[in-house]
Image: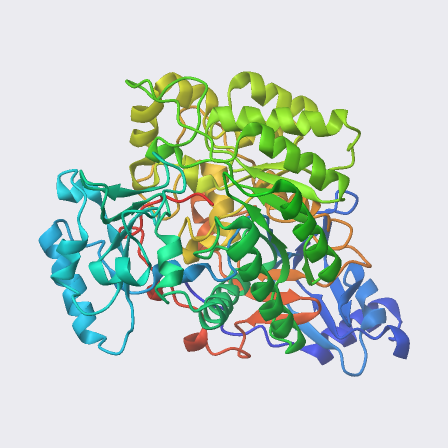
Length: 616
């Protein structure tokens, strides 16, 4: 991707032109810090969709209009930025990305290139020998399909790492492979209980002894007990890295639906502890002037046994402590299920060729209790749905909240993976907002074949990925990447826009085909709204961000090309030249930032190495 050679302002020339056109000079109290001129401005404000110039003073937008009118805001100290025909937009808003701490799951040796147990062990051994000072060996990428369907054991892993704990996650990050030292350090014995037998559990031998593989994040407790989790170090390093990438992608605000740590399922214990640590870390970044994004963080309920009332009380206390427009807690998340691709998500009818309908981790009646408690406390609720049964449970619970009188809520369904046609109409009738990840409904990594195999063509064609229909019906739809379920470079809002418009996978140019069959994607206008004003609405910030209007915060982005003018298959390739949040540049490629210092995609997994698995 190319970068602009220069957007350096020609302040004197443009100021002279504007002054001669209007005869006006800036007064001291209205002199702007920045005036963006000589380009196109798409405001996402229906009352004034297009403009020629924008002026920013302190952290607010003070002018949106024609070039002549901007003259009144130009004066000594104003930096006038010559857009040179480029496009200015509101800053992008992600309504679902886990950018706080989540890259820890990518630590250590990568096994994606290996295709057998022997190759896995060879790579792990070489990595361990090359990192003698690592107290715990980490890695990811094994796939049981490369092991003839037979799970590896601790004894297998001991041959590669005999002297230290080793935690090697599978390609979905759901399942963990531990060696004997890790089992010992994690206090795992025959008597260790399974969190949810049959769903979240230890694989065991005939005598009941754990053999070394933990299913569906059962390994997380041992990971913490073995000392592999170093929250203060790992949280800050991961957050700074991912926030920097997001800012370079044009993102100015995020909703972070759950801080992904090894304690995520310990709702009233480790989750709360890690959440408080994360908020303290973000507060420190903000105080240091190093917070490049507005952050709305959500406590997450992902437990079959936790106390709903205690959870909501914790979330309410967090909302009292964190309520600024840069760092806030205004809602909660419920994660009630496993993944559909792992045949764990609950469905109304069985997976094809089985009698398995999946199961709930958080029972529908518990979700309903949480939602009513949260809405009573003034908190919105985002609920994760992969299966059509979990989608129905969410719609039922949201309907109950409306019937209970909580009509001002902005409770939303996130992912909205599979939704029965009956419930699709109910969602439209109740105007329930939706967030989704467009790449989850493309042919990325063979998902199209997997979906069809799991549930059949009829359900694919009627129930999968219906978010464009909701947008066309007038529901507030937002789109985002759900990092780390996708690669960090896929966090780019323009990546999501292209996928939503084309129904094709931008990471597979030239080979991807539209999916699901016959589904019409979003228009470019709808997709832009889904990463600006409609996403801001879901965060209850549409009165402050999401469009370019006088009085709103100066959150904006400058693009090299106009998404409305390019081939839709080129939208993802458009460079982000500038990102401004709260009146300050968080990314700039016109000489203020060395290109060599910009985030590199080479740091992360290539599409060929990454397989979608976890939808958080």
